[in-house]
Length: 362
Image 1: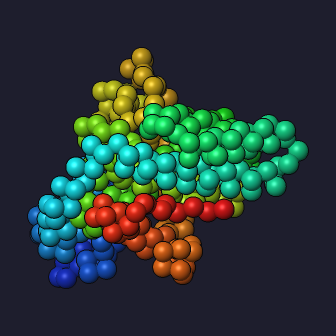
Image 2: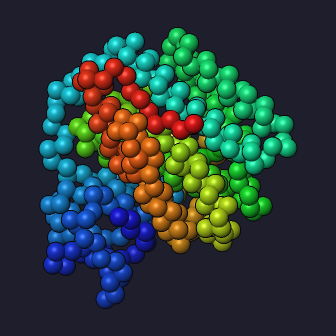
Image 3: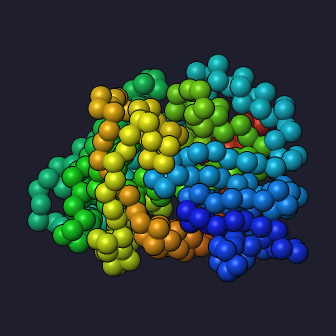
């Protein structure tokens, strides 16, 4: 459930939650149907409403207007008590062979998913020779992943793959006003990057919730480097969904006319701003990069509130679509896939499965 507003109060009313603006009821939320609240903007939450959220074990995630993660309240009692599972997670960090095996599967899946989407774009824009060149380069590094000797080499392949992919991705966006000249972030400098950053963030929260439900520590990853406050395992498992969910949905949102130029606005990000902070380090939704801001301010592009609501509606619709899941040998929704893959990873940690098998679309 999403709340996108810069004013209003979330209150308890009988057995439901209500978002009120003055005397008007803006939204009614049924707790027994809600697993997670994602709040974008500035609203008040009364103590009775907070107790109801706690009683129903609902996560409350707080995002800024720019999609920045501000914090999370979780009450999922009993879902993170498996200390023995987490002990295994920590122990496997010292197993170099295990880490490399997991990292290979993650990178291989991500590159294959990107390669498949690049092929689809090529069929649409076959006249540009740079597309063919980037696809050939992607194929070469995808084939080389299995021979990687260490995780740093894999990170290099992943970085190259992202460069090749986004050099082709720009041809997937049709509207003239939505020009895309490469990936940028913190802050996003154009409308396409604004959508990509928001969708990556939303996917990350779903992965994090699935890992928590499976009793796993989302901070203990095996491909992304460990860092204070970084949900490395959530980032690890997120890689397989970047293209099947976020990248393809971004292209569809623009090409189907869901958004217009008026759904975006420019703003100034500042290191001293609470509402639009200028971040130097990755905040968890992105792979680490070497970009360091020198200026205390930077101009960025954000969605308007109406634009955010349009994207959220499309995102939820996407998560309700189905994909074939080999481990169950049937189609399941992406929402269910997050939890099934988290359980699958738990089985790998417990030694019940030999290797992690990410979602790979060909």
